[in-house]
Amino acid sequence: MIEKNHKVPSWGAITLKPFVYTTPSMHTILISTLVFLVPQLVMLFLTKTYSSLLLVLFSVLGSLLAEVVYASIRRTFAFSWMVAVIQGVLVGMLVPSTYSFAAIFFITCGCMLLVKYVFGGFSKSWINPVAVTIIVCYLVGAAFFPDFLIFRTDLETKNAVLSLLRHGAMQINPIDRSVTAFLNANLFKFVGIRIPEGYVTLFWDSGAIIPAFRFNFITIVSSLFFFAFDMMDILIPAIYVLVYSLMVKFAPVSLFIGSKLYGDIFLALLTSGVLFSTLYILQWYGTVPLSFAGKIVYAVVAGVSSFLIIGYGTSSIGYVFMVVCMNLVSLLIGAVEQHGVNKNYRNNLIPRIQNYREANRI
Image (cartoon, rainbow, N blue to C red; front, side, top):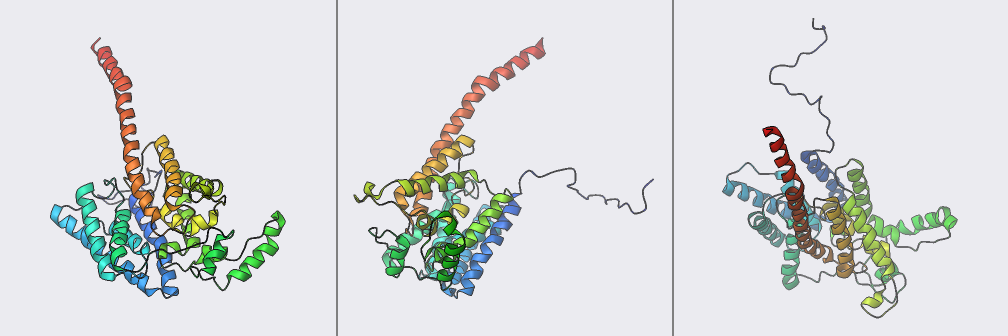
């Protein structure tokens, strides 16, 4: 007998009740990525940074055109508008607001097509398509557009944030002084420290002409959601940030200029797009090792490479150069991983299979 209120599924209906997802699906991750990028765009609108919003629009259109052309020529159903939109938004967020709309459209379209045809499509490419596009944008922009150095700082100044303010590279937020005073009076005084003015501005809106460098607080909140809901592996970002921070804190500037000064961790993490790029670019699909040990090596090398390339922060393009370098390192790590798999197959699996066959014959 069937209970009166019991609903019988119609023929062809599919239910997921017997199954449990251990990790979110790719579709869920892509939608979440788009959702968490929206607050960044909203802040650009609220701060009236319309030029950056238009750059994002043209880079998205270029990325979508590349996806349409690729799917049409290959005659496949591999078209993914979400991936194309995410890549376009990331490109637009990582170029200066002074960039040419036409240039970013054609560069994004051309680079995305190049990466798809030469290096493989989504999740098959060993090189990061967004990083490649940004580098090409800067190579073109170096000849035709204004200087792209976003921050200049005097290394002889003990407080690098104050140096940025004095040089006019960063405008202090109106709420910075009041928030800093409140934190010093009610929180930091109990641990015997006092933070200077400027750090609140770096966390909330540094005013950089590269949008990805501005809203670090939103990026931090987004990363917490990503990691909390297992939408992203925290291993590589955590180790990378730790290694890079330790290098900034304890590796002296004397390695480069003969001074015994040390870096500012906050400045390094908040002025070069480190947090934004670590969340959205460093672990792009298909560009990181698969094994646990490989990921640890990848993260450590990335942290050291960031220090050697970005230094103590204030770099406008150093991070994407580091990412491309790490794509090459990932190939080497992948080759070692594959050698280990082949060795395990020859030494363990093949003998077991042979023993199993012999036992069945008996």
